[in-house]
Length: 373
Ligand SMILES: [Zn+2]
Image 1 (cartoon, rainbow, N blue to C red):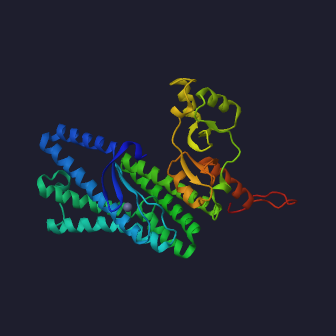
Image 2: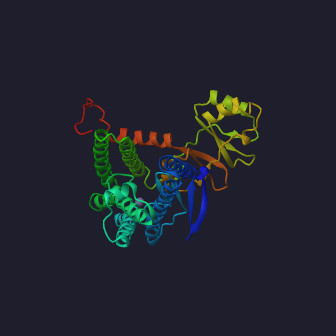
Image 3: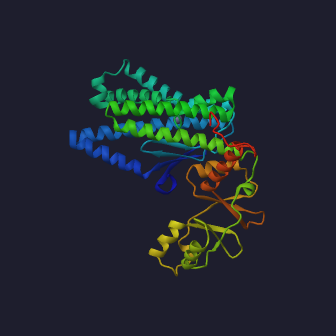
């Protein structure tokens, strides 16, 4: 998500602020429903409110971004989605104090905004005002209330909420990074279940969806840390797939289709005449190309872009790329030629192998169920 459907609205100190196209769908939707229920002034009110809320979300994200900068971590971009802001930090420091400061900075900005708005208002907003306040005073009251809710919501101790990272940082400072993450992920999943039950009882489908999302996010954070444990100190060349069929960008799609039948691969790196990586093609991509442009089309015209790393890139830097949805990472040798590639499935296999070895029953002893595993 992100890049393809988002566009930049400006850059603040090296961080591009991008807005996702679906955000405008949200604006259109609230505008139209505001108009239908209360006419043009209601539509204007809700659209202005949503824009202000998102401005506050951007400020929240810049809380994280400026805190990260203090620890030498840059943030190339922040993307505004209808569900909130997503900052793409280059990395999240393992050092608990750094993670704590970066994670808490965002909610503190949100809290500061809420307090500032309450001071401007001079009192607590009334429930009636929050529901249907109009004019500038209504906007201030609603914005203060929304920022308070966002503050509390962000402090839910579950990934990917900021509270989950605060909790992990706290636990990691005495349990270590991986054990701390495991415990934090467990607590997060318990919170997600409670949130889901609360959503079911209050008939709040959005709360249920958020709970499901949090539940899986906590699990995947745990998986990412387990992966980082087994690949600690390794470089790309040690984890890459190096026994594979590569396609040539000038070959026709028919060649790719034939490779799909004869090789046990779901994705194929595509190389140019010099053997350098120029893209990759997935099984779905090959099928789509056959049905669309046809078997005679050159592969170069239907392939996807591939992110390339050097063979010496640390796995620590590659795992976040794959975890964020990049389908494959190409590995280049010192001469720039394609040596191999890494996929998420490939890493999952490495994880399964590491786990199997860890729980191995010594030869000669009958296998028995081990308590606690
Ligand atoms: Zn945040």
